[in-house]
Amino acid sequence: MSNKNKRAQIFSTDLMIALSIAVLLFAASFSAWNKVSVRINENNVQEDVTLKAMLVSDILVKDSYAGIVSAPYLIDSSKLDELSLKNPAELNDIFNILPGSIYILLKEANGTAIQSAGSIGSGQASSVLRAVIYNNRRAMLEVRAYERQ
Image (cartoon, rainbow, N blue to C red; front, side, top):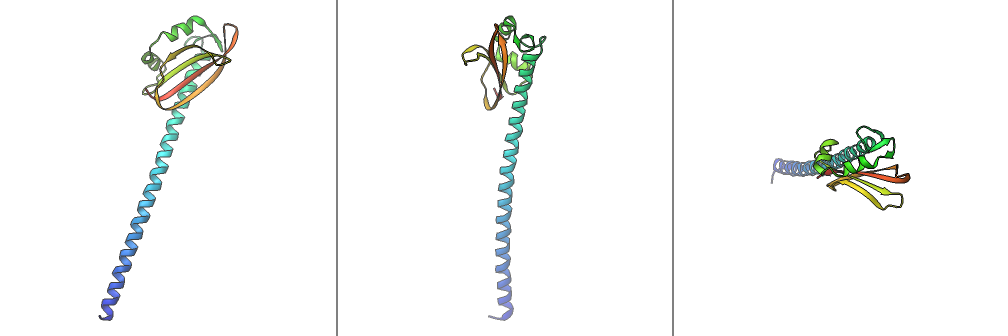
């Protein structure tokens, strides 16, 4: 074999090794980017769901016109009854929760359920607890927002 042929063979072997390494690096970079992208998307969804739960809980416990209170954090029984009669689709529409869903639970300080409204959805969820007064007793209002219905 001539010297030229040996150099050509070494060059082509080196080229194949370099291309293989480049392809492996590209695949590893793509895989890492995909993992980061998925994690960023999950965090964005979680932030969105948490924000929805916080906004709904703020409306419910601070706004005597649109919420279920007669004064901030003081639950009005008639407004609570009215809210619990609404079907889940109405609640989602009222609070602009689409495409997700909202679940509202009023419970005593010991955790015993008093009344609920909405529906439990699926996907990522976030829960916000607010201390409130119901029938002159301490209670907790839990608002859960879900990514999907």
